[in-house]
Length: 244
Image 1 (cartoon, one colour):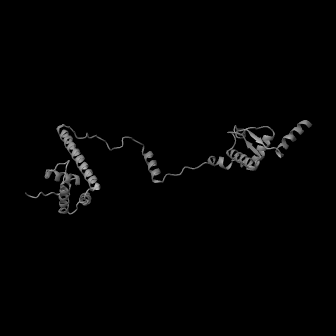
Image 2 (cartoon, rainbow, N blue to C red):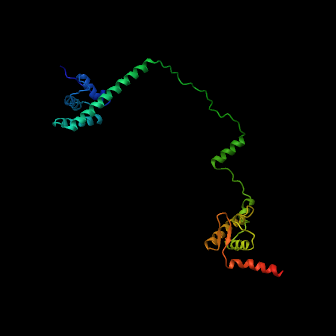
Image 3 (cartoon, rainbow, N blue to C red):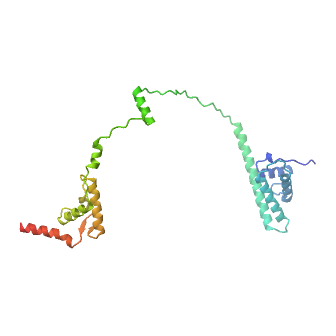
């Protein structure tokens, strides 16, 4: 009987090579003589003439050699488990390969019509028209040679002419407003018509008073001044009103 020759390049992986050996030697897939299959597989891998043997074939050969060492031991549960796992993988791989062959045959029986993609006629020319001066201005702007526009004094006027408001002056303003009863809530200290500097200074003044413990802000925004010297301006006002 002539010896069979297998080339690893003809197989997609080690499981396919194992199935080829099972079929070539007419083995029962559900009752494989594992020792014979291991010897045949290792012989094929060892005698491979391919310069670069895939690592998956070498890894399977190492696993099979380990399995053979366990099989040589009497009543080895580890060997039986490894044998069942290998047999199950071969049966599953064989079923998947048969199913893939059936699906491939069905796909070949179906007629598929494919046409070449349609070619769209396009015009690379720019469709719009512009005046020559507009194009020249755009080119100068893109090249960074556009003339800078003069900046008028009115742009700096709000920054230069803005009044300076100190935090100390707003502290006095807040205390006087509270003492005279002009304000009783936090939102009454701010107005959309006042300068930004005044708004910022008022906010910082309120924070300073709260930090010093001289002002309390309720959850609804109500303001309360602690008793002490803060009540004297109100008392002085009442005395002035009584004298008048």
